[in-house]
Image 1 (cartoon, rainbow, N blue to C red):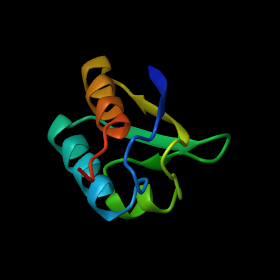
Image 2: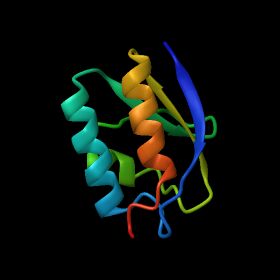
Image 3: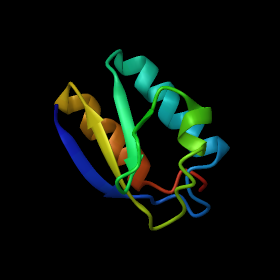
Image 4: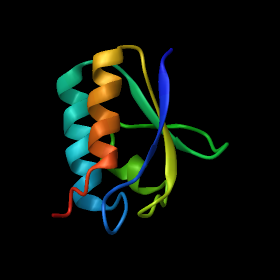
Length: 85
């Protein structure tokens, strides 16, 4: 399963708004996507609540994993953007 490491770009981290935007994009993609921090257990990126439990702040490196490369690229790009702007 393809994965990539990406730095969280949202100025306040993966809180409610960025988490909801990412979860919505995962749902639209239709393939499972996970996000993890460090060696911690990955969470379902289709759940905004689970994304928020990661505690990923601005500048945190996370690993995004998906079965589909296009979906992986889309979600990684969202994680890297400042979705609070």
